[in-house]
Image (tube, rainbow, N blue to C red; front, side, top):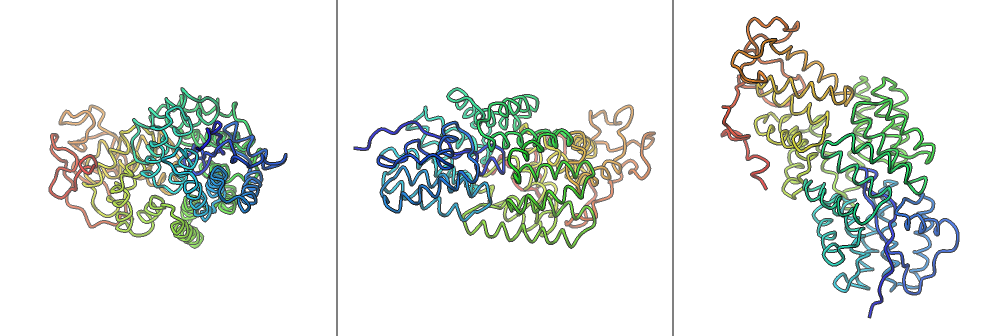
Length: 523
């Protein structure tokens, strides 16, 4: 009969920490019934970091991988060591961009499950499989693995970070919040606080999120973990439109872990917002060298494009396509970043195909909803786009990008009051949210003009139904007169518009004959 396992340990923050700010990978504390503990050195330090729920350094992680690979060549039936190796492979893939490591991780974890099946209690490998699924963007599978562990071992705290990431990816934010509360009841320290910070951020509780992120920095157990927590703090500052404060968090992260890719990419965004574009491009180059994520290539390309350096932008976009395609051969879902690229720089119809498939999989996060709404708008289908844009902006997360997208969709539909309000909100949240889109937001706002001083003639609260009054004294130069639609974005890919009309006040989103079903109806 299989013996009782000793308590679990955690191997640092993996794909979600790099991409979304919080994922943690899990391996067993026991390295197998007969496996000796690693000799004092980097591999042993990796195990010690994992016991603390913290990240090991990449050299320590590599040492642990080598140690387990050597052991398993002589002891291929050791299920616990296969689980350790699988978890370490996942983390390596997430932290250095080697997505081929995910293929090795899957093989190792399946070897562990073959030696000791899930039905007999191999929780360690199930947790590893859940972390792997999250790293690849397969949130349904991650939820299945995480819920299986929660059912069999409800006090196994390591199940809850897997579930939080999975629920977030599926857009089930209520369940993510419950899983976070359970995690905090079972476990303290930086990993739990970091998770809670991101859940609060998604609810729009920005001050609470920042407070928890500060606490996580203070409690981080290793330099690598502290660097990850500082990056999270910097990202929150950036999202609030405070680039100087963001730089002040990324700098010490890079002092702790030189070449830390998420810190470099975060600092690049903040430096671009501060007008220090040469430094920003330098940091993007270093980030892509350390961790060639498609998202970083997209951001770098858009910065180049904003500077009129179209050739350099195309080079970065090609890096994006190559990296996303390569990752796809290793089971990684890159649909969201590819769709964002296609919507703005390629084929909106291609973006729609990618995002419709994601929606059909149940991947209904606010990020997918926003991207799908924007792709529909860019394809000339603004009425279909609006329900998705509303879903993205009304779930709690305060995103300048989401607010801008919704405002442009409303402007296209002739809903000028809401359009003005949401574009203003985007620039209020973060005036430099995108080197390409923030200037467009300011131009769009100028074309919309000022709202009437005494409110709209029709008595509506936001001016969305009546447009502008003929005697509006605050109309800016170049703004539309009453009843005239603002000029369209010249880069808009859709057909020439009909005369804008406002749906009846009682109509539900997407209710017109030309609109598709609402996001809720597609559940």
